Amino acid sequence: MNLTVFGIGYVGLVQAAVLAEVGHNVLCVDIDAEKVERLNQGLIPIYEPGLEGLVRENHAAGRIKFTTDTIQAVKHGRILMSAVGTPPSEDGSADLKYVLAVAEVIGREMEEPKIVVSKSTVPVGTCDKIRSTIAEMLKARGREELTFDVVSNPEFLKEGSAVGDCMKPDRIIVGTSSDETETLMRELYAPFSRNHEKMIVMDVRSAEFTKYAANCILATKISFMNEMSGLAERLGADIEEVRKGIGSDPRIGYDFIYPGLGYGGSCFPKDIRAMIKTAEGISFDAKMLKAVEERNAEQKSILFEKVNRYFKGNLKGKVFALWGLAFKPNTDDMREAPSRTLMEALWQAGATVQAFDPEAMQECQSIYGQRDDLLLYGTKEAALRGADALLIVTEWKSFRAPSFDLMRDALTTPVIFDGRNLYDPKVIARHGLEYHSIGRKAA
Ligand code: NAD
Image 1 (cartoon, rainbow, N blue to C red):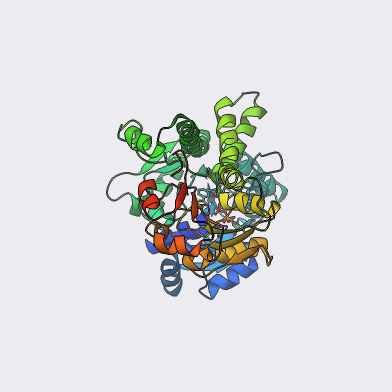
Image 2 (image 1 turned 90 degrees about the vertical axis):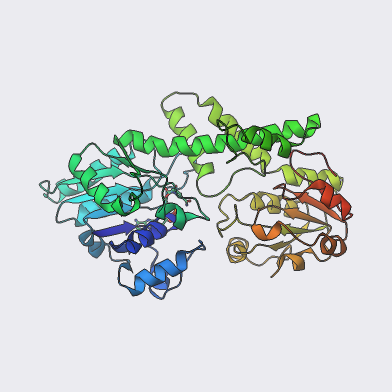
């Protein structure tokens, strides 16, 4: 099937590559000419396991192409999928300018019937806005006879395992009330439902809402656990034991109950805020979501507070080794990453950061540029040398079993502040290191 994907970001590029892999003919279009140029040269703009090979192979096979040409893009696809960004506006609501810009392009250029698929995370009612934007453009052109439908098809991939998530989705949510559109969407996604039916069809508004509800409950689990960790620490309980204890209940489960430094990334923070904003707009007090967000904001500062307390508020001139910059492992994404809150607070206090991340160093450099108080090292061990303490921010696998003896010898003060509870406090103590983690007594 001929398919066009608008927006070649984390969602657009991965979905396009996966859809090309199963045989669809995908044309990707983006307003970022440099990104398109680089992709045409085989250079992948993001780190995502398995993505590079997939894009290169399908590009070589001619099943995925990249362009900035919107006329060609609208012409190519029977299905036009929009995966452009929906960043937060200043007031926290979702900014729909990119989404509606795509709708305008479609309304301006379409010459035959189209199915417009909205993949971005958008507030309830956005598909109606896309529909009316396209209809207005067609009216202005005197082409009201051209038919089109707008489908909500939110994306549930997780950065870090995006290719696998799209290859083997848990579910494919399709919001439409048209049988014809449903049939076409089934054809598009049939390769992913071979084992069992993955598609759940519902009305457009419920599909738009499903994506927000999913992110809201996941963020709630994280904030809940972080709240429990604060209580555990003060009550002399070990949150890691508690986690295993409650996770064993299948009604609770082990996923998403890790205490840590709060959620970050490009989705949860903006989506929770957007949902709160949506609620405000209809005079509904989203009490729980506000608490989830408030807890998260506090949690992002918790490691800084522990460090500041330990050094008695005297951080000026101190040097801190920092392991992990990405907001989570297996990605180079640093949008709303806890590492940023921490580094910025340390710099504000006059400290220097010696950082290492397996994938996000370039991203860090492009965010913060050259500065004397940020030194990026090629290995996690090199980042330790001469530091006053080690701060662990992202739970990369390669951080799980380090040489504690090397750590102890490299650090000026043998102390670890672990924002991800990677280690057993007893083991650390045996190696002569002091250990502060989340929701557990210091050891
Ligand atoms: P992104 O910022 O990585 O990519 C968006 C792309 O859209 C950029 O390359 C940008 O240049 C392009 N773009 C903007 N306007 C355009 C236009 N008019 N025409 C063509 N291209 C245009 O964004 P992302 O992380 O891929 O997220 C996209 C959407 O998917 C968001 O709504 C997000 O909330 C949602 N989502 C993201 C994830 C995730 O993990 N990143 C997961 C699920 C859903």
